Length: 180
Image 1 (cartoon, rainbow, N blue to C red):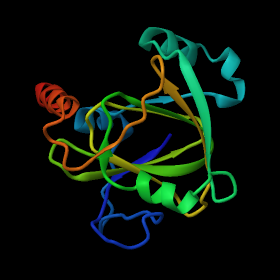
Image 2: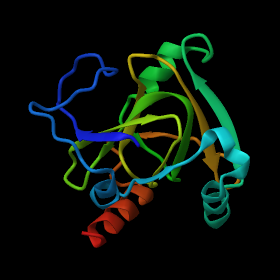
Image 3: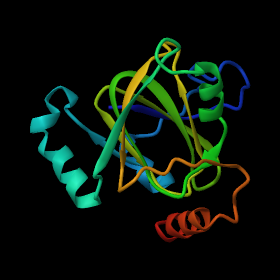
Image 4: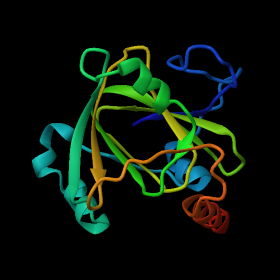
């Protein structure tokens, strides 16, 4: 299960943990209410037999997948890509990521615009809702192999903050406010 906590606002290396002092952990079951982010634990070593995963793909219409290995050895223009991933942005579609190997941090904004850090590792499947401000960085190990899932043809356009007039952002804010 991933660890989840509120972040400090330090500008030190983004790959470090960035805990508040004292640390303020968040139970994984509270993540959805705070941010709209959904979480599942998936047995990636037996993905072909994983019923929860198959049902999730079917019920949500995830019909396309690809793999990305995030490391200096496997990702062209690694340092530029990591910089882009760590720039606060949103997407107009859900962002679905299943960690197959390695680990990294997804940072998402909560209802009150505070940063929440999610340390994801092998077997963690996260669904970030369309319109949520977020960013990603590998941790100090600098390696993650991740399956990206999509509904239909992948659209991977990031809208850097500020994008408050984006329709996906407005819909997200209305949805998260309604769940309060």
